[in-house]
Image 1 (spheres, rainbow over the protein chains, first blue to last red):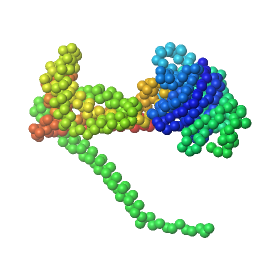
Image 2: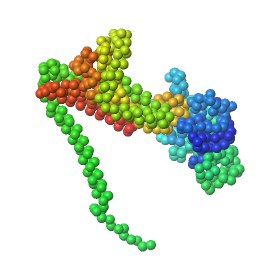
Image 3: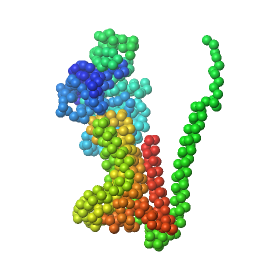
Image 4: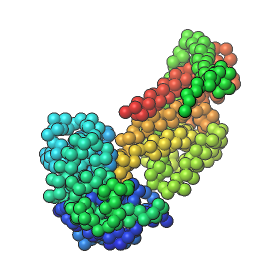
Length: 259
Length: 312
């Protein structure tokens, strides 16, 4: 199920504005890859280009290649909607659908595929997804309550359950813990460790300890100068990044000397 | 560094405070004036209209009681407005969606501007357009309906050559109610939180699926109140309907005929007031009171639903 992603020489534009320049990296299947870097360096933009979510902004386009298991994401024949069904995403702020129950939230993506599901299949999928997101025991007695009735951390795990219910190959996480308290953050980090067995996970984080704790590989993004496009400074195994980075500015950023 | 006393400012003398007082006075006065105007209208309608409760015979244009007079008109008013809403609501929601979610920004801007312009057209002009263009062009459609669906009471006919029917009146009202419904829907759609739209897109929703998943649930109460406000506009509209419809006092579901169709309260007042005197005036004013109450209730309901939607 999980797939690897090969990015080669990717430039991301908003209209004429070059936001991210020349990214080349290989994201391994069944591993956690973290992106770190100062605000505005393009790491979120790059993450969104991996499932073509950045195209929600008019004028957004890319040059270069993103290959998922040998299939290019940006071929003219590829529908961005189909890409997003394969590559799920979890956002910075928990965003369960406010009018839907917990149960309906988990099924929202599956329902889009328009297949009629039997009640028992739906029940199974909801339980499986919520167990997968470590939320089942907390909500199993109140599945019909609104998704918004949960705490922030629970809402975020509900969003993860919703994302894995459609059985994506890759899960993208855009600062999934930045709106959560430390205990909820720990719960999500534990979950990421477990999800790694089945999914390729890419996570953007502002928290370097988090990157060090959860990821196998880390990419450091930075701006060459203010107003210049963001670029990938260094991409290495996390242990190497945090002990003996190749690039001087990586070390400066990680040791807190700037950013 | 020495500690100095802050200078004492004489607050009473400052012009800023005086400006505050003036502004507070003006806005309070305006608010009270509006309440007084509304209360004045209500008092006038009650005072002048309630005596008509005992009227019958000649005073009520040949009906046995005031209710025999008001009911057909009320029925016609509601019928025309419901037709208008059935046509305008889907159209307005569609246009609002195109403006907020489908069209590229420059086109959306122009479209929004054009729709707003519809609201600026005087209703006499709508009336003329209704008679001279819409009614005549609808005749073949009505004819077809009479021939093929005449067994449905709505389309019994006979179709007048002028095409001036209840259905035409409803269509004119639909166009007139379109701007307000579109404007409110567009506003509500555009306010849908980005994070919910992204949540839907990230699950692999197409644009339409995203609108169903994220935009409509968020906008539901706004859409209902938009339609109710449009309904309020359609209920009270006078000139265009008065020009299109013949003044009748019938309860009829027949939408595509002239003499056997219904008319509306507002149009009836406009057409008859010039010739009315004495007790007939009271009768007409009473029908105005009924319209006032209904329109007030519909608008109130629309606002209430909108307010509830904003809260939760």
